[in-house]
Image 1 (spheres, rainbow, N blue to C red):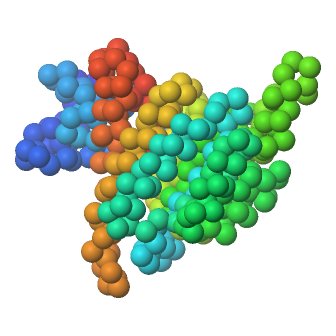
Image 2: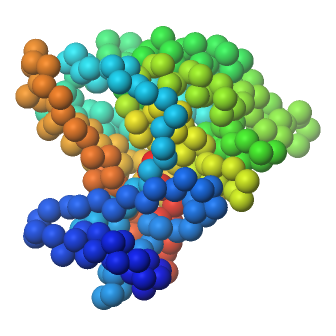
Amino acid sequence: MWTELGRHPEVQRALDNAVNGPAGQLQSVLFDLQDQRAELFNWEMLCDEQDRFLALTRSPIGRIADQGLDLAGGVPTFDGELRITAVLSALGVPAGQEWSGLIGAVRAARATGLRIRLRVLIGEGDLLDEVTRLAAQDTDLTAEAVPDRAVDLNRAIAESRPHILHFFCHGSAEQGQPRLHVATPQDFERLALGPSGSVPATPSVRLHLDGMRDLLAPLGVWLVVLNCCQGGMAAQEMHSLAHSLAAAGVPAALGMRETVQALAAYEFSRAFHRELLDRLGRLLAPAGDDTTDRVIDWTHVLSAPRAALVESHSDDAGTFGEWTLPVLY
């Protein structure tokens, strides 16, 4: 891929600048993917002439989606409180480790002085009970069950006005439109009945692209994390959900290019939120009451989680390709 890209002199010059920049500095490489067919390539596995993966060394790789909306003035300012809303409900896949990684990152960031208000919507009854007990001792933590209808889930998200919106659920890219599948407590109860029960083939709540665009674009969310299968998956005839959300005005959206194993999803989420909240804490800490603009380079947040995925599995980036599945637009 490096050789093919290098056939264009300007592209080659940009790549050379990225890998030969000053020591200690990360320089992002961004691919502008206007054609959905370009999304199908694994750009994140780009190697230089020495077979070094750029995304794991000094050049984090991201993807660009041209925005169709002008959100100038629509992005919320930081007022001393970082708001995170997490929807944790993947039918058949326990969300306990996902929750553990998220709350661990939140607690670590709070310990540095960053105030974080966390709202969690959960489908599993046992996990909901656990988080509810914690919320009774934490005024900045709210736990509630996933509503039965998509409109009510959207309303809960809108009410919380999150800076960061995180989904741990199932995703699909079928019938010409990507969507998220979120399970309700009733779905989990039916699943627990086993073969004799009425087990839903898919979760009851489905969030379609059009509805998510209408919801998120005016909210001013900074970042949407789709830690679910195929949230970043494109097809020949359509863009991925992550691309489409970024194109609709969300400043940054992260999704998975393909189906991802649960253990890899847990590990990535844990490392990603640790890195994300650490960087945001250092960036926002001096804010106080001033109105200074600050720039977040989202691609830089991906380097440490990618390395953590490689290290936790095989320590061989060439044979373990799941570290390339998370893609950022």
